[in-house]
Figure 1 (cartoon, rainbow, N blue to C red):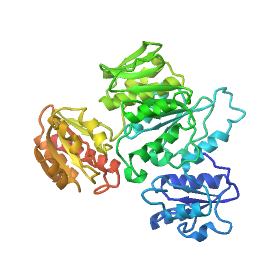
Figure 2 (tube, one colour; figure 1 turned 135 degrees about the horizontal axis):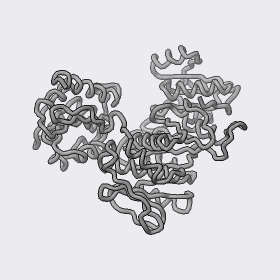
Figure 3 (cartoon, rainbow, N blue to C red; figure 1 turned 90 degrees about the vertical axis):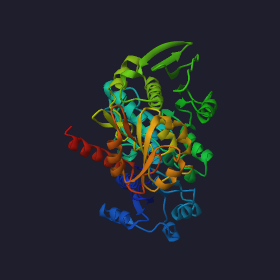
Figure 4 (cartoon, rainbow, N blue to C red; figure 1 turned 180 degrees about the vertical axis):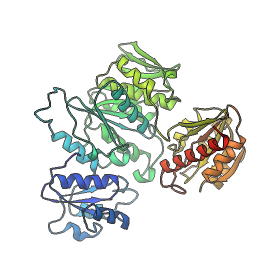
Length: 471
């Protein structure tokens, strides 16, 4: 556990009793603070009490009066500004109480912490932070895997795996790889990674950030202290960020999956199935991405390019990186091949919760039986219609089914309703060489608790098919 000591002897509000909120309360208590916890749901309040924490209604002004609070730590799922500030945040502002989150606490502690005297290393730990709309989980996990394969000590956390305050204090030369969402970067009072990675930007979470500009601004905060940076420049926002960092960041490495980057300084890009590192006006390394079976598609080429560049900045050589690229197993729910039954491939991309992610998924296959739907996002799937030549038939599920049937009127589809029924229908229609692809382009909350639960349900439905088939 990372112990937060700067509030020792003081009351600190913790808003939201999910994974990050509970970890923050524990880290504060371990450092001598007195956490005062609140969750708008009774179940969250009960969880806090069962963990032994004081529960007090932070939506009431009196919680901030008298001895008050030294700080308010807000869980990432709770809006602090848009679309409407939480009442507890407004009270904190009125009382001039600092508002922070677990990411801010983590970086503040890492900034002031020094390795123990008996740590015989002479190189400081390195923190790599990855953000972007799509691919940041895969990229973060890939960086972690590459370092593990290279024999280096590494920890993975943040928006993936362990929450930041559940990590352990790093030893000398150890690496910490963090996946950070915009919900985490927008509020953290301290953000100081050694290497920061920006992958891409697409329309997502726009209500939370009051539009695309606010969404981009939340991610830009990760780069404000000028860390070594890896920047995806396939889109205009990445090119703007790269320009803003020139002369500010110690090193800026552009990466691309859609075009070549033959620069004098270091760049990494995808060209003709190869990942290419360019520096000093010439190619210095190349890796055949066809050897990386879990990194299919242009979007994964971008993830690989970003991971490669980050590992190079952290000191690994090309030959140390290549085994990790080759052996990376991929992540559950991200283009995860669940099974192949009777020549039909079943692929779980439940993490494709928006149109941009679903587009990347559809571009990775041909002869697709597409399972799509859920809780729809603005615009529906109209932007994906140019890709329908890859799709033999669509199987519509969830709240979006009726609306999507209108958008797909010129193409073969069926309203399946449930995910299980969609798998059954798609499997019955599919023939040798087809891919049954779950790429919902929607949130999961109409029928499932999260995208993981949706992906698990797909996997279970496919496994039942396999048993029935005798596979």
